[in-house]
Image 1 (cartoon, helix red, strand yellow):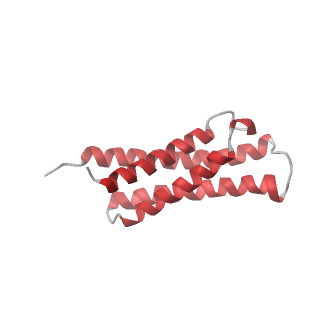
Image 2 (cartoon, rainbow, N blue to C red):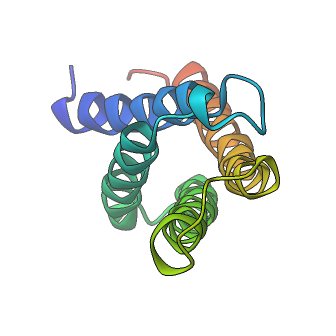
Length: 128
């Protein structure tokens, strides 16, 4: 068993599941979306992105691209959340919450692509 592959797979799957957990619920209802889960998804996505920097293969480049997309979108979602709650302090409206969750949903799509790539890569692995 390759420990590096286990750690890589762990963070890729954890990034996707945290992101999924955050976006689950009514899109505009702030009570359905926990800010701590959003920030956990951001941190884990950043870690997953860092882990993908070492791979020099074509599929590694696609892994890195999907991870960068997910991380950027989650960071933007976090910034929008901060904007609405701290910089322009007001109650989190349905419209504002929809903006945050929409960015996180885009990141979820990128995370799903990354998980699919990981499964394909694993299925194509042959021992010699």
